[in-house]
Image (cartoon, rainbow, N blue to C red; front, side, top):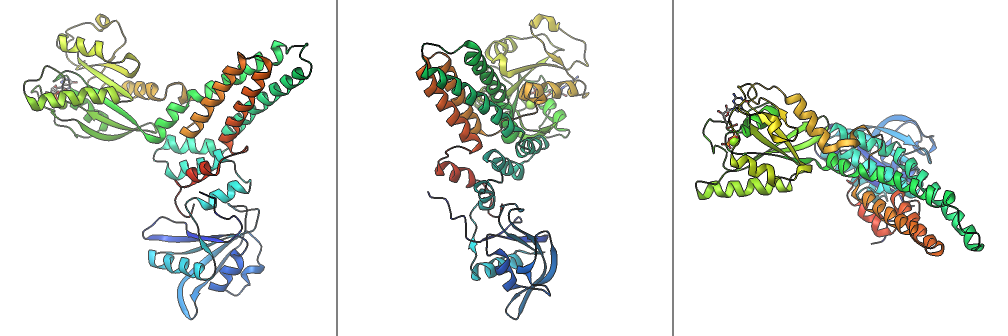
Length: 446
Ligand SMILES: Nc1nc2c(ncn2[C@@H]2O[C@H](COP(=O)(O)OP(=O)(O)OP(=O)(O)O)[C@@H](O)[C@H]2O)c(=O)[nH]1
Ligand SMILES: [Mg+2]
C-alpha cells in the first residue's frame, strides 16, 4: 500500500469522539491558512498571520453560524507536522465538529488517515520513527509506567542510544573496509572484536528491557494457584482492596477462574483467582482444576500459595514440582496463625503473608513488580515496541555472525546489522509497508 501524498492539505477531528467541553479540528498543509480563512470569520486576515497566535472568530457556512471558535496558528516548520497548521477550537459537540470538518473538506481539504499528522512529522524529519511510535504509546498509555516509558521514547533518549550503537558499528565497519583494501595487515582486535562486543552488550541491555516494556504496555497476567482453602480468593481480594471473589472455609469454594484488573506501581495487571488444585471430587471441579493449571502455565507470573498453618500435603508438593521456578513466586499464607511447618523445609525463598490481616502485602506487591519488570525497573531506557525488539534481535544476530566470520564476510554481516538498526529509527531505508503498518494503529486526527 502506497503512502498518502505529503503536500496536500489534510483535516481531521483531533479530539476524542463524544461530547466534550472543547473539540479541535486540525488542518495541516500548505493551504491550511487560506482554507481556514474561508470558513472562519474574524476581523484579521487569517492567511496573513504568523504562527503562535490565538484568535477569536465565528465558524460560518455561508450565512449560517456553526459555532464561535478559536483558531490557533502554527507556521512551518514550527508545528507538529512541520507544515502550516491551523487548529480550530470549537465547543466539543459531535455535530459541531462534524459540521466544521465537512466544511473543511468541501473547501478542498482531504480527510486525514489514521496517524497522518504524525506520519507527516516523521516524513518531514521533525521526529524519528521511535518518537512517532512513542506518540502512539503515549496516547494509548493506560498506566503511569506506560506513560513514563512513552515519554522516554519521545524524549529521544532511546534514539540517542541507538545512534551511539550505530556510530560504534559504523566505526568498526570503516576499520574493516580499510583492512579489506590491505588484507595482509589484518584488523586488530581493538578495532574490531572489542568495539563489536561493546555494541553487542549495549544491544543486549536494551533488549533485556523489551519484555518488561511490553508487559507495561500490554499488561501482565498474574495467576494465584494452590490447593483448596489456602486462601487464594482471600489473597486476590486483599490485593484488590475489595471483596471480588467468594471466600469460605469450605475447600473447593472457587470452581471457575476469575479475573480482576489491578495496577501495581504503574504496571497494569490482570490478577486471576483459580480453583483449588487437588484430585477433583466431581466433573465440574475437574474442569476448574484443569483451567487453573492452564492459566498458571500461560501466566507471566504465578503465585503459588501455601498454607502455613496446616502441614504441607502431597498436592502442595506436586505443585511445587510442576510450576516453572522462573515464573513462580512462593507465598505462605495465614502467617497470623501458629505455623505448622518451617519455611526452611521448602529449600527456596517464600514470602509470609496474611491475606486475612493484610500483612506482608507490601512486600508481596514489591516482589511481584520486581519479578515482572525486574532489572528494567531501574533502567532509564525501555524498549516497549515489539517491532524494535525484533529488529534489535536481528542486529545482534548479525553482530554475532560478524564476530565469527572472516573479514570480507564480516563486512556483509555488519551492513545487515546497520540496516536492521536503521529500521528502528526509520533513518535508513524503510519499507512503505512498515510505515503503513505502524501508522494504521494511530487514531485519525493524531
Ligand atoms: N487465619 C487466616 N485465615 C485465612 C487467611 N486467608 C484466608 N483465610 C481463611 O481460609 C479459608 C479459605 O479461604 P479462601 O480464600 O476461600 O481460600 P481459597 O484458596 O480460595 O479456597 P478454594 O476456593 O476452596 O480453593 C477462609 O475461611 C478464610 O477466611 C489468613 O491469612 N489467615
Ligand atoms: Mg477460592
